[in-house]
Length: 406
Ligand SMILES: [Zn+2]
Image 1 (cartoon, rainbow, N blue to C red):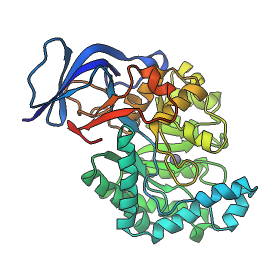
Image 2 (image 1 turned 60 degrees about the horizontal axis):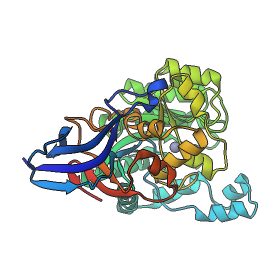
Image 3 (image 1 turned 90 degrees about the vertical axis):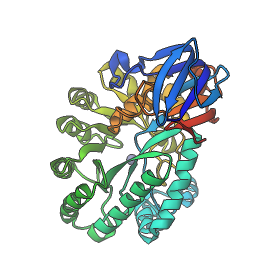
């Protein structure tokens, strides 16, 4: 069995265990100085300091900071086309409807995704994953939701599965057939909700997704429709996620609590009732500050959530419309500046809480004996520095399953 020793770690910072961190524990971390990590094959065999064990390969961390690999719990990774023209249109005063009329908006991504071959989608998403690894992300969630019929949703989910098999990144798939109403169903929403429910058995039985997500929002899927789809998912073993309270608080977060969703996403306008429901339902709040920045929208009330015992995870929301950004380091800085989260709280939000939000906390999200050796060495001495140096990539080296990948 091959072994790898990372020695001379100035500061090793990690969640001490795999539990969800909420309330006062949101910022609970273990700090070890002058530490080493011994990996055996894909796993962490030992963490310690003092006398160094023998190993086949040795990496000298030269006194730097070491953390778990980052986990991105919310991406729309697989899509066709880009929408850079919309940015220019918005800047010259075009409204939402003007953009739709010009063939833009989410349905233009649906069209481009349907037109793209599996290979095209695969290589485009692969490039994004390469970039994410370089930025320290070693596990990510990826949603479908630009196909909007069985064949096309399956095409996206199969690309995610193939990437999970072939790429160094670990991917976790979420079925988001209820992302928008496709053109064909724009005047018959009820029939599309039925369609989505009918897609679930095939997707679950073929192991194409682990979670079912719905965009619960004014003009998209209402609470009743969301409940129907998510319950059907649960019947087939897909745990629930909800895009909730992004623009209007129509009850998505309350439903997330009621259905014990594993996570609720966005939550920009989540009110006290919604926060209470998340807390009672033990739902992880998956906040996406880069999207708020990109849309010039408000920022979720993270401090109020932490005070009310709601665990926070942070994601990129990488997608071609509202957030063409996959950099979790930028997300970490935004969380400090805009959510007033402390760096310790932020690190748990992009590691162990994010891993819990996608059901992977047993494997990744913290540095512990027996867990996967997903490790980032930083060009930094401490955690504050990563959050402080907005916009730079401070990754020095990325170890995935015991091997250097970036
Ligand atoms: Zn999203």
